[in-house]
Length: 458
Image 1 (cartoon, rainbow, N blue to C red):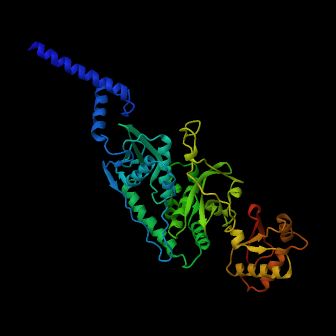
Image 2: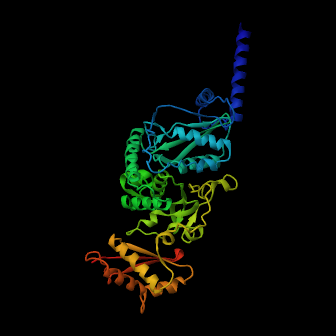
Image 3: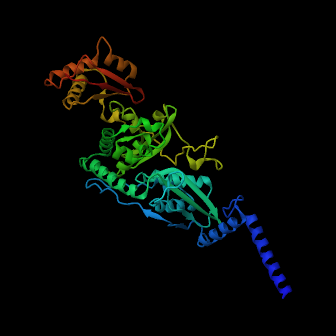
């Protein structure tokens, strides 16, 4: 009997040693930490084995559902006059099956949020797991970025995520800064605001006029949130809810809401990360009649609405904006700054080479010379702007003319063509709509060959 017990004990000890050796050799693939006590080490391995036993092919996904509540997935009603554009540019840019599977899994888990916050004050979403594929950090980051770029309506997510590797599979978890009930409440409010903006859009507008309508509507409803630049707790300012529900946002909120609203009237609009005058910045690229342009709704919403960054080319935007790298083209797996901090990246962006739909060219008063007929047309256009009490009037200087010389002739003595336009316009205007000739200001838009004149009225 004693020999039998000794044999059993030897067999058990051999089994434990073998198990421990297996864990030592493969702890990294199991996602286990060396600092765990031995009992915790084994428990971790057993739990991982039970919950993540691999089956199926590479790229299969599954989502956990622990303690999660569903966020309302309703959308604002579609316009009766314009089609919905469904954005998939981010997903389309992911070329490997693992990243695409992760994107699809995260899209589901983003709507399943735990009701209790973690120690950092964030609400974990369900994990999305890609089976039989160990995705690199760059692949994971690209999938998360693609999800955010395609879905501005998912406004509750933070920029944080975590990931683990177990049994050759990859699990990724996103985090919300709001509990699921608050997310659902804001979804309803957001949809009401979207419906209000889109419902007020006249039917039969061209793509350019739809874009103009949205650009002006956002500026009317939203002001720049200076406090959010330094206050990291004002997360809504970076999202569509800040811009539309709260009425205050930073550049990220402006860009995301422009994308969201454009999708409701059939326009492909995307976000661009980078810098503006050396500071972190976000704006849009937008497709108008088949051509791509840069649009910066934040810089357009100053004290007076301006169009200096309304549909410009790559070369013009790069004069004071820098565009972050394409994460898909990075060499190696570097996805952070040298100091380890998070870096901003883009996915693939279209080339913006046209200026056809630039505001000054498409909607500005054309200046092709100062012959009598040209002056009459310019004066009539100024009068039309005054009748609607427009605060500004924009001119476009024809490419055949020397820009600086033409502007000097318009605003300087002795000919002062602008003054002539205003005097002629005032003769056709009623009292109360006449332009104050003594209070005329102007701003040059050299790169666009534009001139913005600021008007005041008697």
